[in-house]
Image (cartoon, rainbow, N blue to C red; front, side, top):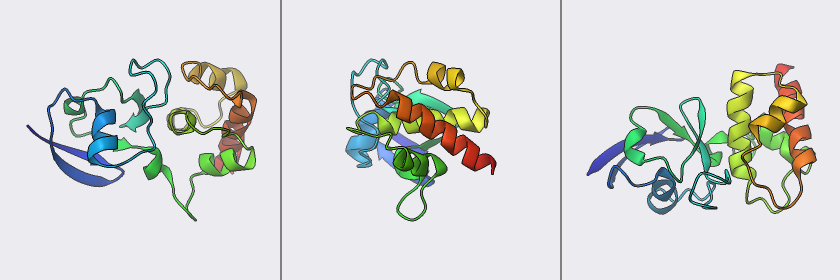
Length: 154
């Protein structure tokens, strides 16, 4: 089956089954390795991407359900000299230790800041509750999101 999706601003025509998990298409067909396979059950958050304005667990989201919505992965957030405010804040706060969860956390944080440009600590923690981070960078992650929010507000 032929599926057309837009990922990171680029349109792709793919020959995949509609029920194929979006994560598999991103990693295997489009070679985007930012979203990670963690649990395969939408429980850890490592595979989180944005579909439209929503942070979505791509390991259980069928590619056929994307439709006309735009998909953004960490690769589309910012690169090199043009990092997103969240990426800059994560670097400044040293909020990524092993980095396995970082992509999903960053995409969830972007969706949060797009909806709420001034979240308090409790809101950030609640939003990130479904992300499993084993390395203990939680406090630095929250500080980084607060920093990015503050810097984005100017």
